[in-house]
Image (cartoon, rainbow, N blue to C red; front, side):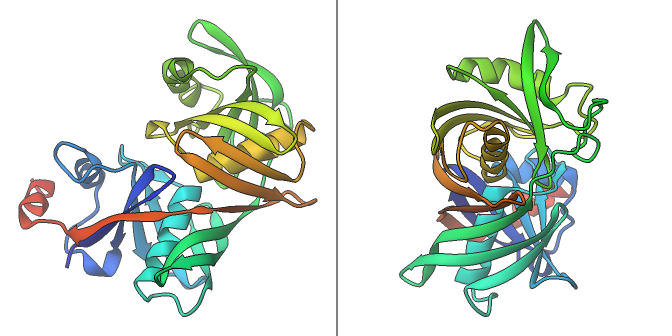
Length: 286
């Protein structure tokens, strides 16, 4: 009871829990405490395995601030490794139901019978302004301007089941995204807030990205962010259909078909497994 697994995808780490194997309510307070590096385990979020009537597995994704995310690329690959490694999956291919839609996944490569390289069909990129959602009057948000504190940015928006705002840059600056990421995330033009990416094109098949994740802040890597960046760069004819996205935590291969369906492939590695202590559970319930 109360077993957990902690795994990272390119330095983006998640704790995986099974709804049927915990004896406490996963409240916003509990999520924040478990994800806290000082008073909990420390994590970029929590993945909760739940039942699904539509797919092989159901998945809920929580940010470290307790909010719920629609989709997470790294989170999906981490969850896929969990259900494969721990024997829940019947084979190497299976489906997942998330708040951001249905997802198909495939274990591409294993190491010592553990999933290592995983491919996930992330669904179709959506450029519709209202459906992302944004408050812009234009049908699509491509090359629009917003004010973020004392700076103006040209932005491009897309949904991968969750909202993304991409700024294309000639030079990437970590201090800049740490300074202005929060202002863009919480801008009034984004009713559900937004993930933020600063992207630099290296060539037609490679781009570098810095990420500010909604509900989590600056992060080393993000799967859905990589997909979003690749789609925006392709939309603006800066890259081809197959793009390598380089982040501080590592790289992902993103493939986009003619209908804007996106496939993401990358590695995941387990960090630890264990049991949440009774003392921690007591603190969660106070």
